[in-house]
Length: 161
Image (tube, rainbow, N blue to C red; front, side, top):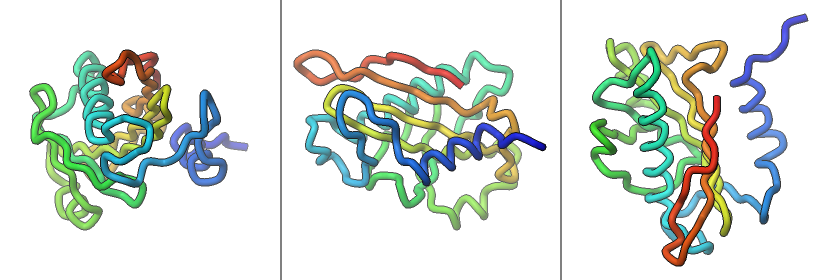
């Protein structure tokens, strides 16, 4: 009997169970910057993308100069910077991804995020040319940030595959 891939497990958990409970009730972010917990949603997503880019720059499968972010149903209505680090960022809807997916350097990230008053957590799922995804989820990452200081800044707590 084959075991489920890590991506299938993550997607199952996201859809069936929701996010795990931690230091407060986690809710999927569907609003813009009004999260009710003092965090700027766009800045939180930009921080997660920056840390993901940094982590991937050390891998064999480094990212190209443009990364596409999927605007799926759970993605908040936010504007991201046009560049994060040295990488161009474009938020695209699924029909745009369908048109672009066969490009030689196509990288499409689906990002799922949860914010609480004390932490922010993100799953980043990486799709390459043709919307291919590694069965072992080697380019996917789970990032957890602590919310600290008077300015409610995000501090990377952990990043793992």
